[in-house]
Length: 612
Image (tube, rainbow, N blue to C red):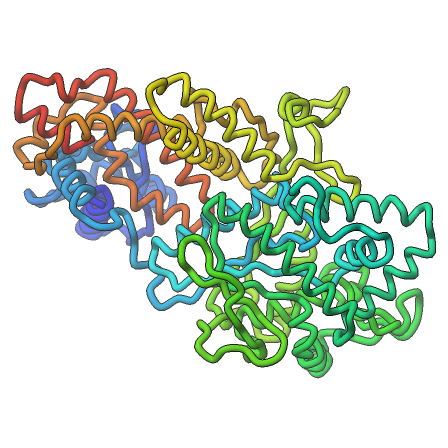
């Protein structure tokens, strides 16, 4: 936390100097200089002032420097005015090291911030159709959403994690057709997970048969209608089927250490008639219009600003489009409508947290308050960007610009598999470097299979390095490494960049990977374990930490909360993934260059132990 103090002190000192020099007050932020020899922070306020007043930037910086007063108790050690107009500041490292290490060791949740106190946020992620298992592409959504949740929680937001379950669409009708009319047994053969069985076999085979047996399409439409209307044996069977799939999907999510607060089933949204209320509101406010002529005659549609074509919400036959079903749900998330749902506990999760869900009929009164959030974050890939933009626009028309700002689409690019990984997992992709996923065509790799492959490889490597350890310990470590490798690989990339996932690269102990970060942590833990009791840091001890590697490590530790804030402001877990990698790299340099347990000077050894 101390680097924030240093940064604030630099800013306040410069602001006072600017005022004393009778220059106009300019908003500015200190920034990291490009090279270490330029100090720990730089400011460019002189360039901004010079540009406004038509002066020379270096001369302005010199005047500011002459008016700078540094309090003796501050973390500012020194400053320098450099051409062409920067002012560079150096930190007082003994004090910075002492405060940072003391807080990091003694303070619970070091680096956490109070930014979110009193703010309700809901994060919707995963939301995989309940007719199949999660594949590797879904995991990017899950890991991204779960990481955002953790950042929000760490910054004291009141967060609820939602998982939207589309249990009324065509994909559900497809597997119902398979079980009810094509004779697929309800129990998977060979003990296969039920979600794998439905997606890999039933769903794929039914879609193949549609082109061969056109009568099945009629059955599909009948089943879909029955599901949407509810109250029939078919609807009840579909509900039982989807809940069974969801339970299996959740096992995969829990393995990745992602948990939820509420499952929102689409059939329950339909049952509440929430669409009717929102639709009437849209008509009253002129958000939607009835198209009277042309190919869309009889449809209710919305006209987007700057677009020629209209977006249909309700077809002429009365059925709703895909986007129409999302509008009531989005309205509920941000409090445009009162909560119409009934809730009950769906299942108790491995972390002992109750997972609630919307239910038909009467629910429990003691449920948490869901919906009505100050901010709703929806994690969906970039292929949905236009639809999410339309939803956001509709919300602004219904409730004002505030509600548009409060609805955030966090988009990301898709995940593909490298050729090597596809080959290893039994997929043939001749002539291509990677393969995209397609659930309908059956071209995908289930997340469970990827996790198993990672676990197997991690187990083999762990066993090589730990020949005396037992099987239980080896598998426990292998699982942690596998999950770490996968999560890190899926959040370290820019959101607008496609990920080509490779099993071997993700497990590499060299380079920007989860296991590399874990290895640095293991090294540090080993030192502390061998040392036994860890001495408290003192200012005298901190003054002995003056090697380059030690100072770099101190600086990174002291800046942790700044990285947390940056990740929050940008909704970017990548920032923390890269921070973790940078911290691990810096620690490894320190490990190689600064002996800890072997250090003969007792005070220096104790200071280094505290740093570790």
